[in-house]
Every structure is written in structure tokens, then in C-alpha cells.
Amino acid sequence: MNDIAGNGTYFTASINGQECRVAWYPPSDPPPGTPHGAEAVCVAGDRIVVVSPDGQRWGLPGGRPERHEQWVDTMRREVSEEACAEVMDCRLLGFSRGVCVRGPEEGLVLVRSMWRAEVRLAPWDPRFEMAHRRLLPAEEAFHSLAIPDGLGPFYHRLFAEAAISRPDIHDL
Image (cartoon, rainbow, N blue to C red; front, side, top):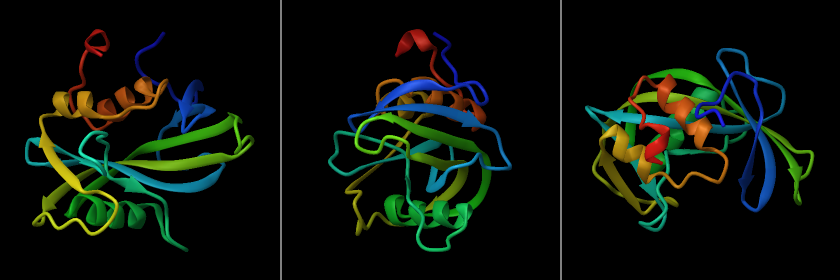
């Protein structure tokens, strides 16, 4: 198995109890599908920001768009809400395109924008679904993520595109 997602090459993942085919698409034109928000590798100095609703399952800040929101606006809002951080600079890294092939949402095609965001942290004041925030070195951040089965190559690609060292696949 290849340890990093290739452009437009689909692989199977188990997401929320459903089977999906997921692919990475480079910027700047999103692939066809329903816009499903944004996710960001947030860099604060030499650390990566990870967030968690329960202190057990850690992830990157991200979420769904609000009505008429542009990709970048969704990313900025979600980073503010989930990580209590202000985006100072950002770069679109690419898109995920997921096609549900088995489960209640079979046939649904969702597209999410993926970003690298340089952030300035505000005091931690969780008011939304995330109750915990941590700052970790890149390798530790990668290993702390709750990555759904099959999405390892996708997150390897995300960290590689963000120009953040990623762990060797054998370390997973």
C-alpha cells in the first residue's frame, strides 16, 4: 500500500460506519461534489494545534460551511471557533473528495478544502464543540490524530503538502 495519497487516486476508508472512496485533489479548482467545509493544519510558531471534544480523540480544526460561505471563510471561522486562534496567513493545500459507496449516505459526494494556516492563539475559551486544545511538535501532532481507518495516506499527504515533516509510515 502506498503511504501517501496520490492526486485523484481513490482509496477506501471507513468513515462514521460507512465505506467511502476518498481522493486528494490539488488546488486550485475543487473537484465536483457538495462543498463540505474546510480543515486546517494550524501552525503556531513551531507547534501544531490539535483540538478535541473529549480529551481523547484529537483532530485538526475544521468543519462545515455556513450559508454562502467561501472555502477560506469557513476555514477561518472554524479555526477561531474550535481552536481559539486567529488565522494570520494561510495557503490552500488541496481538496478531499469522498464518495460514499456503502451506508446510509450511499451516493453522496462531499468535497472539503484543506489548508495550512499560520495562527495566533487567543486565550483558551471553549464555547463550541471542542473542549480541549493542545500544541504539539509536528510528529507528535500527527500521531495524536484520531484518523479514521483507511485515511492514513490522506493525512500523510496533508502534512507533506503543509511542508511539515511527517513520520515514517512504519512508525504508525
